[in-house]
Length: 211
Image (cartoon, rainbow, N blue to C red; front, side, top):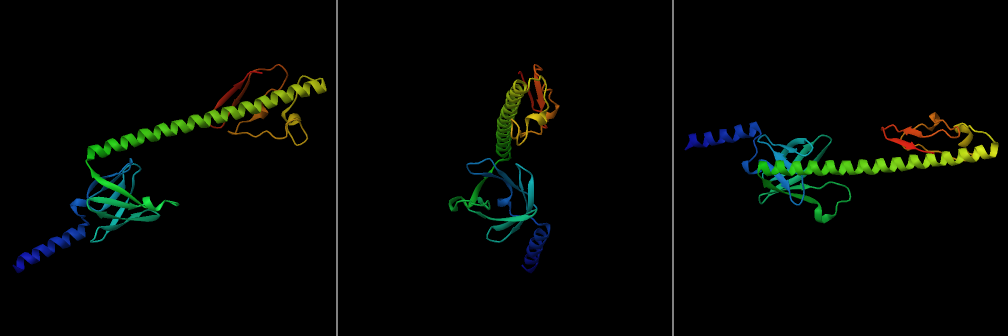
């Protein structure tokens, strides 16, 4: 009996040294009504599979834990076959102060991550498209202002050419011309009849304007 007790104690010590976590805590955990996936390794490392953030779990006997991440730590607990992670985002309502995760098969977790990546790609493309349209419209607006100011300058001064600094300034026809994508209007040939004007922004967005 004494030998069995010693052997059991030795097993507990070895498991503790190796940092093994209980089997019920290991594996993939899927966010309820969401697309986040956490994975808990045998050694107690928990990884947010969507982004690769990882850190060690400091586990207590009752299932409460602290997830040690670079620069900060998040608290949570394992309870009734679920994983609850403290939602530490500023302004979070009390009713979602904890994110609930449930155990899932590896294949299902991989499908969830693939779906999340598709959603992120679609959203990124949508934002890029909206930004591009905004930049194009703002540049076109600037070019229309320049064209109108140049034509008025030609009419008032009986000339056929003008420079940018003769059109833009506090006491000029255009008070201020603001680039939206690092574009340079100083390279434009403002001579009457010269068309089209072509402007290239810092991000590569190109706008052509037919006068």
